[in-house]
Length: 128
Image (cartoon, rainbow, N blue to C red; front, side):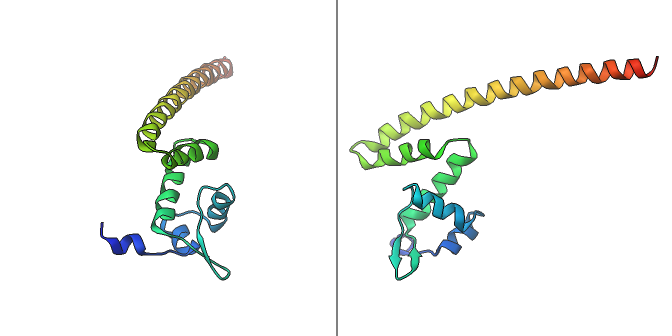
């Protein structure tokens, strides 16, 4: 990636359209301290770094992380050796989320079996 792409700025609408999200959601991430745009008068101006952060936030939301967890992950970059700590932390969060999803899948499969059993019993009673 060249330096020009790092100097590029974006409006809130640009980012909302690019990432298929709402301007309201982006403002919410700002209020939470996840994204810190520059101001030019009444306009928000987003940097390449803000764009990257938004991409990370949305990816984290898709896999089920809370905003607090996402903030914790992003904030790890502020410290020396932050990337190593962030990687370790992120891997532990991903493993925990994977286990939660596996448990949810087991619970759903169990409920589906119960529904199938109930459906079969009702069908048998109907046919008597």
